[in-house]
Length: 564
Image (cartoon, rainbow, N blue to C red; front, side, top):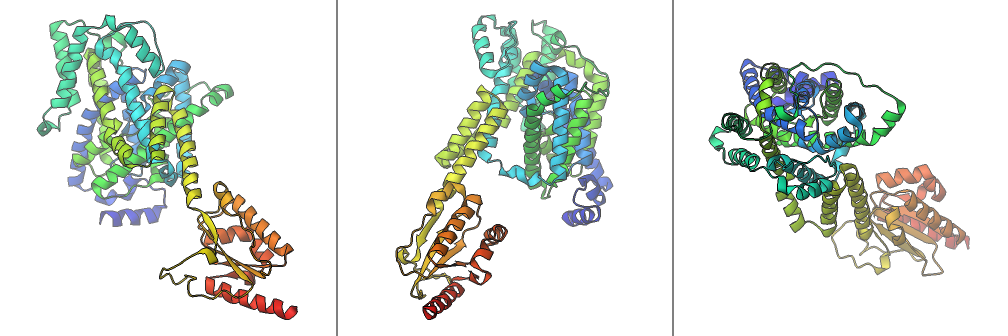
């Protein structure tokens, strides 16, 4: 019934319909109550995470809450998923930190707004399905790489190290930390270990109360009452409980041009993360999201978040799963979550100054571990082909050593090259006389008679540039009058494949040999029509199957013999 009401609503309003309006018939009093409870619980979970992720991103703690409020509400209102919860996520932490360190908040706002516009355009032009063409090995690789960079970035606060340098790259951070291990603060380490222990060993029976919230309360009390010399958020940052306000960045062509790479990175990562979260939640509730509407919502949310003082946002898998597990089934839960975070910002934000920095580091350690997906990576390494493992490991290393832009670009290029090699390896061309076909295939040539003066040339696999060397053909006999090119196993053809066929037809024409094509699939046939090849050989020489092709060859051979 759930899917029927959704599909009817979508048909009435068009494909790009926010899920909130598509499922309005499901908004019963009982479900609204469940969504209200789920929204409150998710907001409590989002509170420490939003603050921690803001600090990991190099911005003030309240900016993480701004993101959860603005982006969280807009994604739920406009989104294509029933249960998606959006906000700041760990995937963006290192990217945002790098942009802020080099270009400041103005650069971050401009790049995020541009990314939002790109996301909206991706949704409008129905590009949501294209995200699945990013191989899982690349996604696993950069996700684990981001987890590593987050972990490394938090070691300083976890150990209470002291130094004045402000390294940006992960390798630089590790080098500086190693050189300053003598500044280790044992009290900070104890606080961090207590917070980490609480989050690891917090009873599952009490999962409705987030372990991260208990860790924040416990360690804040510990530091506050014991007088331990440990940095808190208030020691390093100014805490504000002000409401988010609209801020328009100063735009100029040079700044916009400089932020294009960052905008593309944010847009691609937001699209991948949000749609992955939608897929996971679909499996949990038996629903189906609208990927294009979700991209539009993510775009609107990122523009709104940036203009109101937030940072890039996307769908958060952990918070979305918590929403589902606590009864959330409509976008109302996500909107309630945003409103509750807003109330926390106004009423309780000053108390965030008491949170110890080692506790924030411990929270992010757990976030990094949960997002790393190391089990999936280990399974891939054990079971996948070596080429896929190479793509995964290279993407992972490049994410850590350089950045996400380089990692995704190199990973995609390498994955594409390896895919083309695989396709080229399975592409072949051969003369039928050399084939022993013992199958029960009704199109088999085994029991068919080839007319005298006829040769059959069979191509198997896609005809594209990477397999160009597989199409070579030379006539073995001098008395050939008809050449049948059998293409039933050619699913696609590109410009290089077309050139090969053109050369073949031209060569046969010079030798007065007729060319007959057998069983053209849809894409090759359209391509050949556009290139004029069908007109060149004659429509009568385009046959639906091998029987028709052999019959046509017999007719042509007979006509040639009579002409002589």
